[in-house]
Image 1 (cartoon, helix red, strand yellow):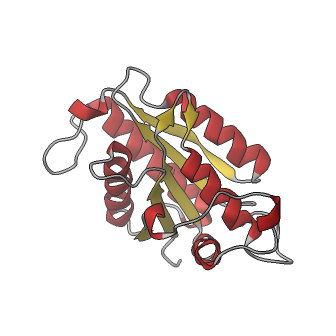
Image 2 (spheres, rainbow, N blue to C red):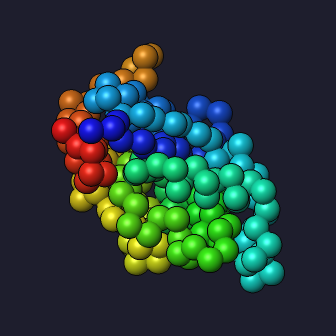
Length: 189
């Protein structure tokens, strides 16, 4: 059976992003389970705000992002939470990618297996934003969602110098989520 191909990224690309740390850790664990992993930064795909004039006129970065999504069996997205919602830049990138392939399903995420994680300095660990993102991905984009979500609370204190989670419970949730992502991608353990 071929190795599963998993695309990993965070909804934030700022320096020191806790969600980039979580995405990087998820990528390491996926590789350790023999997945073929490509980790990207959405910051490498600069996109203007999408509006009705953009449909049918997607910029090159949107085409590149869509091609990456199409080329993978599953996705791992680590999203920050902004005012109890998910990152607007992430929403914008997904919306652009959904318009970038004429004649194809409206979303490259239709039927794609997606796992979600989030990290924040607060007590809920981006959970409110993750539930909103999950609804959008499932209902709006047609993605097949991994049931487990990893929400790392007080994340500014939960990563060691090597980028590992110091909290055994969060680390165990991530292990279970990675295993489920691989299984649901059709190439699982």
